[in-house]
Image (cartoon, rainbow, N blue to C red; front, top):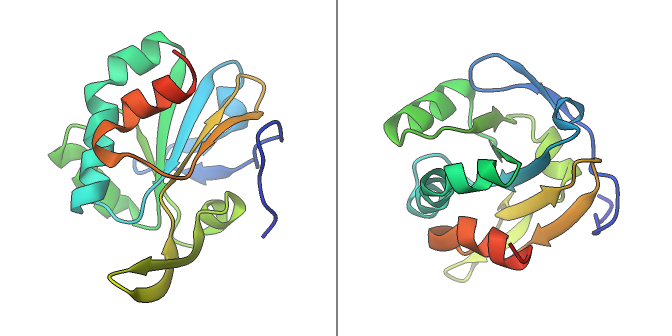
Length: 154
């Protein structure tokens, strides 16, 4: 897995979202994309992160952002999660972990002293031209939207 850096072209993807609609990074050319990776639908940290983005969604979209969440959960799980918390943005099921691995969001992590492989919580901000502008490795789940805006100086 090659490391991704700010200033690099973001890896392309083409996948169906939770509603079966085709989503490609290229289709968002001209818009800024917040592409966030999270471990699991409807878990405390992931719910806090999604709700932070939901609660600040109008501010994010007014600044030209599109929000896309990615985890290895399937379409049904994503639909249930989005419906339960009224999430207004796209969730992508990446059950084969192709996008997750392309964005270096898979690896060894440690929780309560136990090491395991899994999805690493991470957010990429991608420019209108498809270039990585910001990589957030230490996500503040409860305040993620304001963290993104602050890190971008907005």
